[in-house]
Length: 125
Image 1 (spheres, helix red, strand yellow):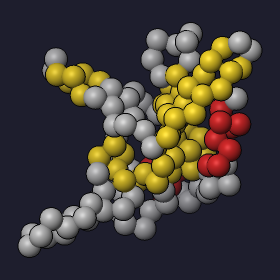
Image 2: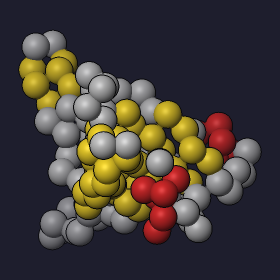
Image 3: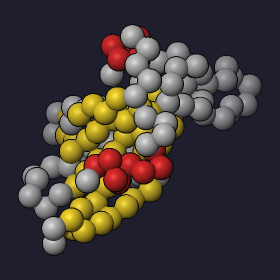
């Protein structure tokens, strides 16, 4: 995804690794006298384990469900994210975790398509 952003791609859909992490595009609020944060909160779309420790997924911003050929599909969305090491004015993206009954794990997808964000479930169908 970083290469696509460096090349100036304006729209893309990319399958993400199961250990992908992102940051909120807007920085965290200042805590007082210390230096104000430059980056947003860390977001993990999928749960994982690290050295035996369970790391939970970040709760999604919204969840949508629909039925396709008698199968109930669920998509969890995280909006307005940036790559973990992105600069302040980098484009924001949406991450979707698609959970289907036939899959053992949810499929994580990154979207940079401003016109398609409102119709992301149609894109995933």
